[in-house]
Length: 196
Ligand code: OGA
Ligand code: MN
Image 1: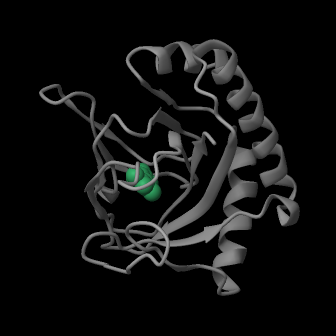
Image 2: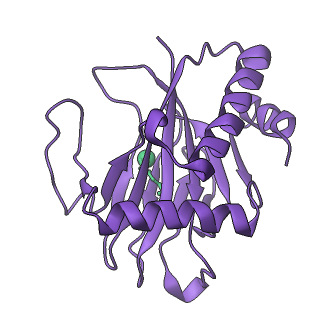
Image 3: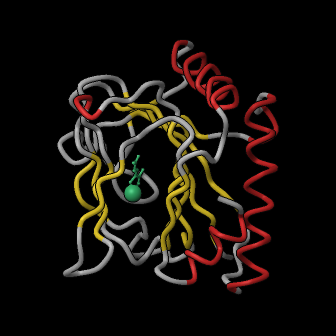
């Protein structure tokens, strides 16, 4: 799916799923960057809420590593360039005024999930567009770990498997979602385009 098609879907219904946003080799290179940061101990327990966030593993069990664009490896640089193109396409067509991108790797150990939530903080409304890129090789239905996504109050729940290369994008303040615990480590890059 092109950025044009993603932008159209973000206009209506407000979310898009792109199964092959990156090819297998690009995903493998990002996974290597992710796992090497993980093994050098760069990840920390993710918190809930903003600022001095509280770690509450029963709500959210992942570990994260925030991306610093200046120290990003080649695979990440290429992705950041692509996401910058997406940001501009969204702003040109939807006038969301997306200004910057905060992005982290996330690693969910087996058994960890993230309970149903919205991505926008109560006291900070800058997060506008959520993007999630999965980095997992050969994800099987039996592995669990799907992203459950409520596309409307009453509407159907989408179950999105975290298969490597899939990009999920949605308006951050609109859609409730949940990460179901998996039987194996679950890796992703998750980011929020923010307005000023
Ligand atoms: C999040 C989140 C979903 C996923 O990090 O806020 O909802 O599928 N992640 O990883
Ligand atoms: Mn979320």
